[in-house]
Image (cartoon, rainbow, N blue to C red; front, top):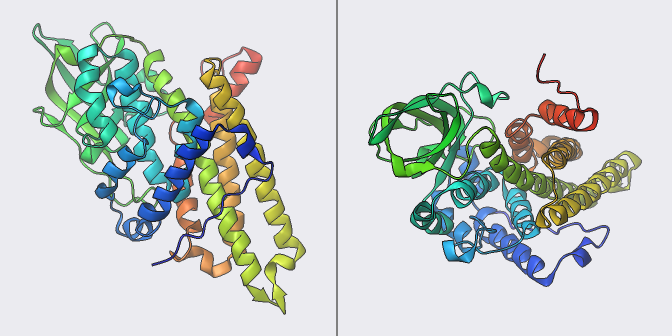
Length: 393
């Protein structure tokens, strides 16, 4: 079993920008990842299996709903603390971070923001501890980047709603106890519904044969005349803006998480470059390898500054959707470039499970696509700076 030797790079002494609480939260998550994730993650990725035993640990370190108020079981932390936890989890594995960010931003967040007090008390404490696992149903087979075109719909049957449709590429779906499902009512207005495991007609077939996020459970949500109690409607907000608010929170977490994957690849490549001898000296002494490492630490540092500032703005309630999109797109693209360069530095060893790099590379190929593709986020920025939408003819 490999020992986790990770040392986090901080080239600009950015720790000085963090509060003592933020550093304590991050360090606790870092140590948990070293102890509970690093020793098992390669095995679970090879098996393409989600390690369900980590759910309670994620709850204990506050990874589920860290910014949810304590009265509902959350840790009541700020947004930068949330980001730092996501960074550390993705340093371990993108799939583990996905599990936590879906639970936090796509399940707990909408229940907290849009749900009733009864819904908050029923679901949030169990989601916070990991007793319940949740998922978020927005993407459909025919509607990925255009969620407003969704076909999943529900009818008011008097004493309940009748839900029909399907969602796909849903993280946590196979094991979810509750799904936050977005569907259109008879007038075509989008609403959120809480669909619970065991409701007749509700199934969650697992998606197999993935080469990416193999330690994260992915599946479909299928609704065949599902009777949803009226008290399970999220009444606080409707329209497409509601799920997009959830995605803002999730994308913020991804922007931090991608840095974790990049940091791990950089740290691995740096250590390897000092140990691997070729032509009579460590490969870290050759110009092209130093170029790669210097560019890696430069891009990581830029991304750290970008996300820290975004976290400050988000804590102040001033961060915009477009700013979050920029950070998500930039940081995931940065991380992909770094893991690819790091893989080259390790040569053939870089493709083996002895090192984390190839796993990070495969995972990030999903992260660059989900919750807004690389190109869609470019167009969000383009719309923001020009005022002209490229999404409509």
